[in-house]
Length: 134
Image (cartoon, rainbow, N blue to C red; front, side, top):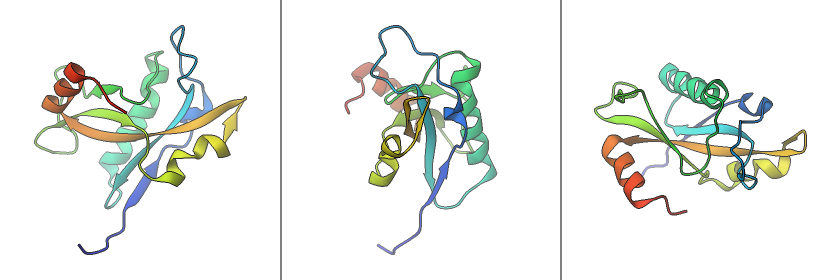
């Protein structure tokens, strides 16, 4: 396989405010930044990251590893694709991206990265039915 470069898009500012955490979620990170790997940056990817970065704050909720967020109800496809209509949050697959919380803290909270992975509705239903194994 030919070597190719991968672009990393990262939000900056989502972690400025802690997310609204439910009672008993003391282990979940309160501050996160989002990460998206792609071949080249596109305005649509940046707009999606911006929307996802605002989502937990505007909805007074939180996002964490294993959470899914559909793009509307019913979900609409992202970026002109045939079926990618849901975002799954996962831990980053690149070591230096997964160690952000060791390097950056805000008000005593480590800032964690979540990898933004697009899914289809069928994949989202599978995850909801079978759970998310880490």
